[in-house]
Length: 93
Image 1: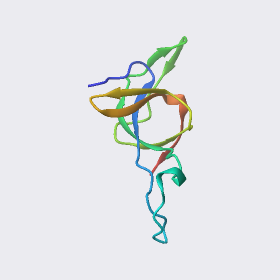
Image 2: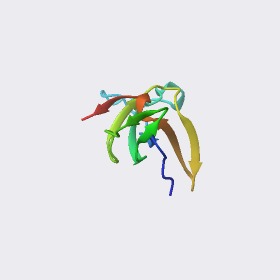
Image 3: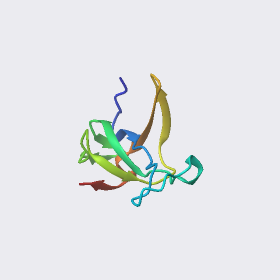
């Protein structure tokens, strides 16, 4: 199990849609890289660079992140990304 530290969040990207809303099947090359991810684990927060950081992202949240942020990690055959809480742009409700 991966447990993030400080203000870090472990996320897993959601799968890209394989068909359009009208039912057209997309090839893997034309699929857009998803930006919505599921939060798998959340660090405890705490003092980061001399400032108190409170975690407002929770395990199970769906979030939107920048496309090219974080550190990619492969663990037990699954691909994850570790990002800082400040790299989360929005929570999807």
